[in-house]
Image (cartoon, rainbow, N blue to C red; front, side):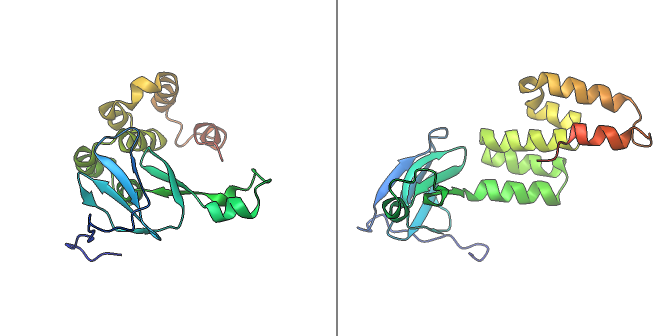
Length: 178
């Protein structure tokens, strides 16, 4: 982990680079794979390196998917082995999850506006709906994409079910157990 104020060092003249892949949905980001480290760049600024010995196969929605070819070659006839595919979340996605779990939604808006990725806004909208904060969900624009769910939850919020005996039956319907 890096100390605050320090940026990871990455030399573009390093000759150990194995692969580079651009993010499919965000042209300002790309990932670089070295022998045992992966760097994710945003606006040519690297994040801290991620230890990985896989080969990058996809970079979208702030997740980098890599394939461990050693695992594939160990069991080439077993395509159901999920041990060969590894996904890594980008730092901004991890930080957003932490912010949303520890802060109010209003406090997270400034961070979201700075990062500006659609997945982060979608995550904020989902969290707003889970907390039944419809004004925040509308501000994010999440309501338009999930109009039926939002209308249903909003109609439930008009009823004062928080102290009702029906609460025990409606809560699992609003937040299904996964």
